Image 1 (cartoon, rainbow, N blue to C red):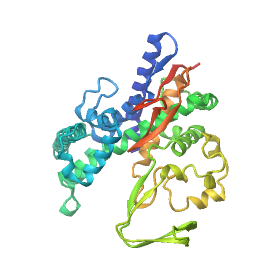
Image 2: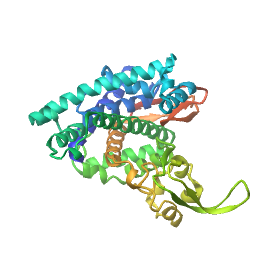
Image 3: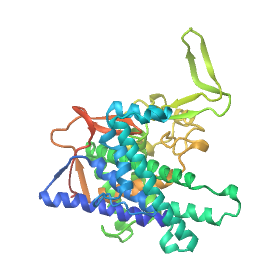
Length: 401
């Protein structure tokens, strides 16, 4: 699977690099990008369209595909107000509220209707290709593979109906584009703030290509990307400090007992070392907080320092994340049977895009160095501290020396 999706990753990453390069060339020198994270999210949207659904979303070109526009709208500015976000989630719990004639409900209904209509069109094409046995039409994207398995299944119990497949399609897009796109934006932000780290990463990419006889226009293989230690460190450190998901919720499937790492004092003064949880209890998992706990990561937990990943794993880190995490002691992908099933896809995608653009482009903070803060709504996005109405991540970009 990695070798099948890597060309798609590179196609879109190189298109992103070309778009940013054109911005630089038009200005004649360094160019200020008003929102770098928007560009990286367009790239990951196009990737999930091609690799996930076998559809060309064209977000990096004209952004005209209705399905791409609908999901971009969901994460965009039209639902960015606090009221809009509250209404969105409350209406999920109380569907009758979705009928109230507010701008938020009208917008969410339009997005929902568009997603359903366009998803049905894509699903119909995939089913027709699968029934015809046409690999050229159906492709090897995730949706085509899912539909083919459905068509070939002889036991009805092993088949998904159209509603279930549509749900999987929405999951592909929701989990696969804005998370990775936002993480890439944060990575570029940290590299801009730490030029020595950016230079070291660029040097590793160029040296590795030279060692394999590749020029800047040629592509690294899956194994060669995996062999880049500093790229791996930067990736892990970004996911640790700037993970796109700050919290998640899990519900107890049965009565459970939750052991605590240290005693907890209740309101009545009683100290407990475990908590009894009833079936149906909702638990909030503070992903971002776990990733910066000083008891686990050390006193510099809030500092972007990729070199920490070259050091020996401390006993505090090993014990603090034992049995909980899916990937490298990070809670970013969670763990267990409800961990992120697409984390390997996301990691390869992240590394491919980051290495492609950093190799030839240099990112710097703007001269006025505006303060950037993070705010969470589904994903943790960057905002200007002095203007938090819309998500923005402005950086300067130029050709790398």
